[in-house]
Image (cartoon, rainbow, N blue to C red):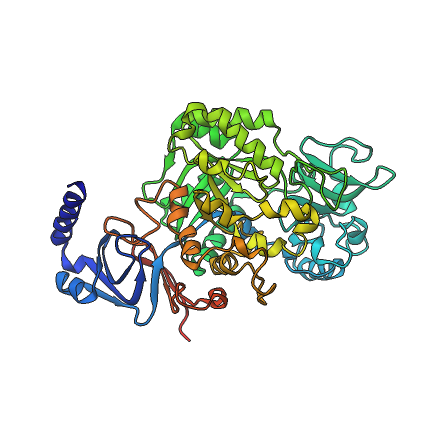
Length: 553
């Protein structure tokens, strides 16, 4: 009876809408992601971007006679893609700093830096990101000496591809306010040193703060510019929403100004950056949602450990390729517990970065203790990455109703060296999408841009093939963990919306929901797997209005 009543109310509301305020979209195929009506040919939505009806083209055109027509021809329409874990300012800032992604040697890094530095004022810090020693001959960490010859006086600070390590030259290290030599280490971090105790120039996890705290910070105008650039890049790739994983209160304020001015082309689900001012604001003033529906914050992001690529992920046993090293806990178990308990008291969702099997275990134990009897409620706490899980911990996520927020391209980027780090036994519980999904865990998919590309098509391809751009290895890397194309698309739509408490508003195309959708030249559920990488994004719509349209050829 309730469903019948809702349908009747929607029909009455639709009939009362003036036809001139309605748009009827027609396409070869619309994938709604609704189990009750998975495919359609047409969709009607009003001037506010609310979907009125989904169904047959002739029926909707007759029902809304005089409505505006939007015919996308032979294209396929899917719900707006949502990246469940990205860093918008980081993406924009990567466009404003030296791009080192894909550099295959330290020499190539230096050449890119020289080219970038030509446009900088004398003495200005040279900032870059994206280096990855795993791509270089020997795969060894670099040193300050590798930069000093080219930049003896200008401070240089370069973030690793995963954001969990930095590389400084001697001029940059001279700015640090304490002696870096010796054997001391910051809590949750590692200063790499040579045999004599001298710092090499590489700082891992919390040790990066020693340099970050002394380099000139980005001003408000630069941060706003970075957010604008990041959002523009996102919608150009078919994203209508991003879960921005960990931002300070000051950055939320800049987002608010953009939303007030109507300058946010997509929806941002922002996470507070740890047990700091933004979380305190949520506790004091309540969960935040902008009237436009384009911006909200109701989540705090915490850090259990570091990253696998820089050997900072916390493991239960030694790294297979670095005996004696078990990684780093970026927040101590006590700090994690205090933050999680505070968030629970305030009704704030918790999302914890956890890569290694120890990091994931500590995160799950922390959740169990903080939630207590509420572990069986609809809390939707999340683990970001859930990258390496021990066999006994893998089923705990579903049992505790914890969402796995995972990034398919991490697997295809890491596969050349991940087993070296973990060995043949632990790798079986790594990047375990199929095992988690079959256990009943909700999988919200994303990219972790700018660590990976912002392009969700690459994530769809990686989830389905577990292969690189050349289709290697043939058949996929640990192929038993593949997802189907439908499961992958659901991970970037309805399941991502669920992870943001928005499945009743976003993630599928149905009456009463928002008209957020993407127009694709090809059908992602019908093309060969290899073609998922090159799907053509013709347009991106949010609230029924185009926020990106591909240039005419």
